[in-house]
Image (cartoon, rainbow, N blue to C red; front, side, top):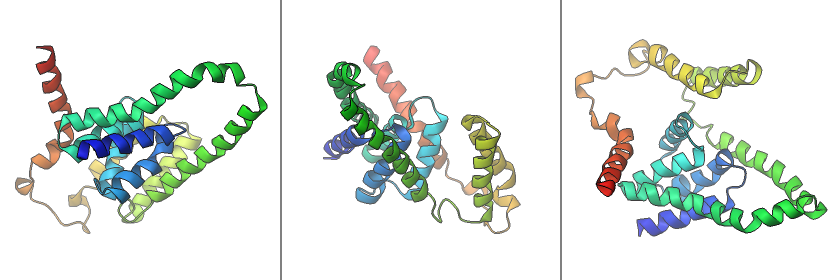
Length: 214
């Protein structure tokens, strides 16, 4: 049942996710967080950050990880990734010839004139949805958010470099030992499985491909 749900959810996301990965975020969040509860808001934000840091479109990268979380195995990852790519593949095969032929048509131009601002609205909706208490628990989070915006917008720093800078800031200045408002955690009590969860899709994928080719 979970595989059918994954296929249908990500087929819809791929079919209606006009504008690329960032425009998909609000639709992805509605399906996987609000409707099916496969992830929490915090987990969804973490996945978006990880997807941005890894090669490839954020929509496809997030599908790979969410598919794994929802199904518990690499086949869910593969199915979600395939499903989100399938509509674009089919549609591009069907309409590429017609679009190139009629792209100067005033009716086609009218459709795209309406789609462009709608895509901007979808991206803005995704950004506003992520602005909650879980992602902004204190003033420090707001400072980092505003700082990242200013640095990327006005100083033209590459987004990947900005993500690395934010991670370094968090590691050195927002560590619980440096923040008296956060309870200290004994390193011996930390479950190492929590830190290896992100590596499980990669591990299972390598094992699966190795078994397939050997």
